[in-house]
Amino acid sequence: MKAAVYYETGGPEVFRYEDVPDPTCHPRGIVIRVEAVSIEGGDVLSRAGGVLATTPHVVGYQAAGEIIEVGAEVTDRAVGQRVVTVSPFGSHAELRSVPSHSSWLIPDGLSTEEAACVPIPFGTADDCLFEFGRLQAGETVLIQAATSGVGLAGVQLAKRAGATVIGTSSSDEKLERLKEYGLDHPVNYRSGDVVREVMNLTDGRGCDLVVDSVGGEVLQGSLAVLGYRGRAITVGNVSRSDGRGVDVGGLSQGNRSLTGVYLGAELEPHRGPRAYDMIARDLADVATGELRAVIDRRFPLAEAQAAHEYIESRRAFGRVVLVP
Image (cartoon, rainbow, N blue to C red; front, side):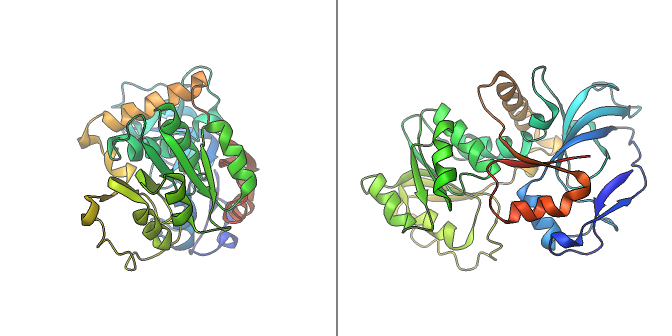
């Protein structure tokens, strides 16, 4: 099969489009013919400086396609079904082998490309807002990097739940587009003091919940805008900060909290079906149009370098998809 691989981490230029051996099917796994790859923020970070689990390495968490082989011990999947898969690596390829429990059937009415964009962004946002963030109707939530995949999903989910939604981005144009997805108050972090603007928007009360996928100095600002008993969720670290500069000393003064969230830990089979079922519901809601998976651009798999370069330019609004 063909795959976008690299032999060392670094910038997008490390990608090579090469022939690699076809994956084998585990007795408790499936093999899919990949039809769409949603490039996740974690894919970019892994390519830039992650661990090479294989050499050459095929990066990528999330891909969707048609099942072409089913392991001998698998009873709930069949050849020909459309599924979306999540696994630590291996998405940037024509074929992919994953455990069957790491796949979701794609509902009727949902395109394979849209399905490829759902589990990680929507599952992560869902968990941040509700399972760990305990968001309630009438509360105010700040979503940092609101035009990212997790941000776009979070804006939609929070608005549907009856929250007031504040979102940050570096682009007035993208913030304006977010209003159709439920954004109430846009904040351009390049044109002013985010903390001051958020506190003004909340009449000095602060936010009930902040979802922060950026980290570093941005996370410090997220803590600063928490109201009484406010909850901050840190999920990812786009800033690539080591976190040592974040001061949590002020949290106790207002009975505030900071929680780290990683969806992958919730999807471990021994933790039960809660997170798996949550993602299945998100897929169903995207299929009916209640939620929207936003695709910004599509690139051929052979142009993985250009796709990663486009993501790092911060011009994307929504997901960037690779098509084998």
